[in-house]
Image (cartoon, rainbow, N blue to C red):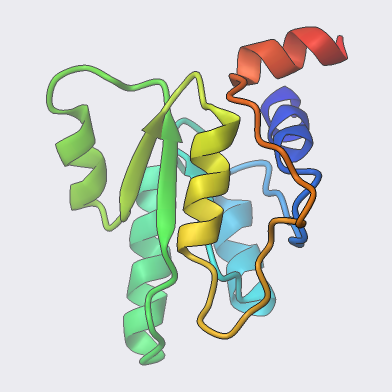
Length: 139
């Protein structure tokens, strides 16, 4: 819950709609009805981790002949080989924690659907804060 609150505060100025899942099984259940343009997937979740949730989502996309939604891993796993293992599960990119606000915004903008309005308001600034800095400020 804390990471969700911090994430939402880091992107609160953007013109986007957020949905959060408490675990991987919930993420798998939410995605088909919500049809997100982009998924940020925590790798370490209870019940079903982010790697398995991604595999299930990718299988469903194939079975329904849908284009794959970009899925970006958010993880503290930064040891040698972790990135390759995560990407081999069907995730498109890996962001390691502590996450930086500018990196999140860059990914959101990069994966904005063609023809959609920019999610960044004209007057937005994007200081390069980490999740820890936002958490400390909001405590």
